Length: 166
Image (cartoon, rainbow, N blue to C red; front, side, top):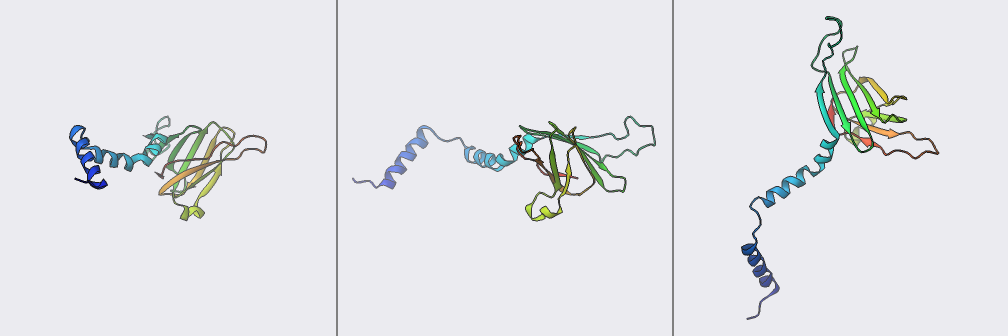
């Protein structure tokens, strides 16, 4: 009896299926892992979401308490970024941020997609790593941190946060 290659391979597959069957959830587990593979790196960066009590430390009535003020922290191998998002004086939204280590950085704030790159706002981090967007764009945004190294010093890598809401 002469077997074709396909028949021989089918026989080997059946033998392995009988002697060492794959776990029942193998295909689903692989698909789930592939689906979250890109998200996993973003969740490593997005480490803290915490409401901030803006009334703490102030006299009652000085500043209205709002649950719309939050602090977010993003961490990567090169930078840690803390942002505080709250209401601005004119009724919009304000974003204050701090970068560690403090380096000369230009920071962009705007929608995640490249098609709306022209709507991004920009600011510079000061000597302490502080930056601000007093009238921040609202909705789903990202921060782009671009090092502004001098000619003779090596530039640190750029950093982009996962999307978050302002």
